[in-house]
Image (cartoon, rainbow, N blue to C red):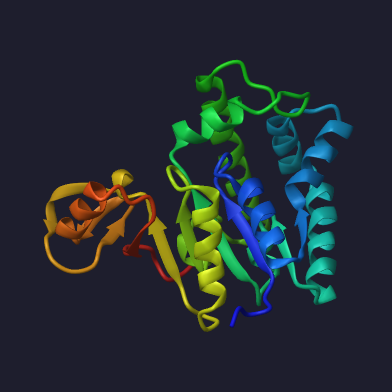
Length: 243
């Protein structure tokens, strides 16, 4: 039976958090809260682009304090929700924590295809890619300095899904599957075409991945690519246990 847990989304910019979280909220019949939408409204109110507002937030901690208090209050309400926020996993301690990753070029193409506005507007794939990378690094540094947590550390999350080729419905289905598993369960699904194989990769066993390079499971990985899989289960290896 699906557990009545809040699901919180973090993920790469352009990874499809909005699409998947909207779909999941509809499937579960719960309310969706987007801290990202709030952040973009605040950027527009300040007359800034998303990147400019990120850099502004590094200097003015009032922005983060306001958003943090909002997330604390939402978490304390006890309402079952789907929350799209790049730091909700830090505040919603009992939630299912989902992290979406994607190929940077795919992410840049996705955001370039969105209707432009004063907050997010890109003239080329290259410009979109640069701004997404700059915004992500600005956030990472800010979260490290203020909270001592690294959003890129995959062990922070219960479920990691690669959205490079997977359809939103496939990702939502993996999340629902996780809700059926005991609390504390973890899983990682990557696009096998994005996982590289080195000369040192071992042939047998499950696919073990470190920084998108397979440490083990060469045969299984080749079979997944040949079969056209978009979400292949892998085991993460090589992250330190500390923050």
